[in-house]
Length: 132
Image (cartoon, rainbow, N blue to C red; front, side):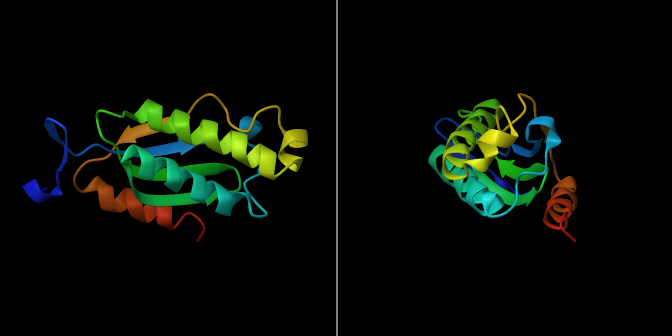
């Protein structure tokens, strides 16, 4: 990694790339029929507001993969909480059928793994080729 690959946030330089995965409640295949497109918009809006760089994003019918570079001042948990919370509220109001399928859109849990050096390309390719 070159020094130019690092970002600055207030008083620190950082590179905090993480692979995130989360699922709908009961791992139901509800991220379909336009929900996935709207969900991507919402995740990207939250990321922009939080100064989070989305390096890869794929939405499957029953789970979401995100590779992101998250500022240490914002934090991984806060980003996931904002993305899941806002998307649940908006999607359940725009796609009424989600309310009848699930008591809440997302599970409380998520997967998170730090990604460094050579792993980044492999994880990015994995996420981008999920639908293939």
